[in-house]
Length: 152
Image 1 (cartoon, rainbow, N blue to C red):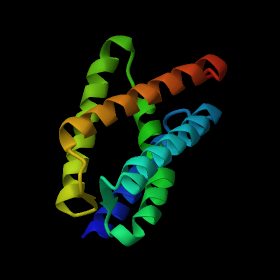
Image 2 (cartoon, helix red, strand yellow; image 1 turned 90 degrees about the horizontal axis):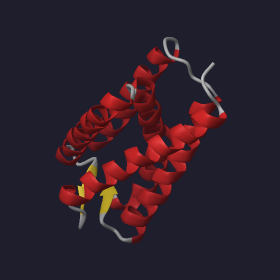
Image 3 (cartoon, rainbow, N blue to C red; image 1 turned 60 degrees about the vertical axis):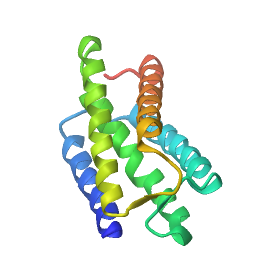
Image 4 (spheres, rainbow, N blue to C red; image 1 turned 45 degrees about the horizontal axis):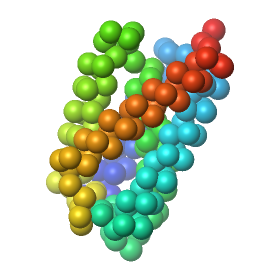
């Protein structure tokens, strides 16, 4: 069930990404955002999952493969979907809080399907803090890229 959920989420979010690709502008800024967020997640997952052993994906012996797949195909798509729908400044905080809640629900589903197995990591408070830091990072990178590579 873990593999089915893992690849199902990747396929679903990639399909959503491809659907919005035609409706929203996708440019070099988004590519840089995807690369930055992919690298950030790869480092995060390697440190907390592989080095500290606080969790693993699906099978402990193959977790590194799933970490790499998620860092390349899942998390960058989430980042671009997030910035593609990000509203103006006043509503951005509420939108981000909603995104964090959605991520927590996805994490709980991942735990129930044993896509992610916790061996020391705690959802409360560590996942909440990790999602806050992640979305702040996405916003910082996106805002920096917007100054250099503004949308046409």
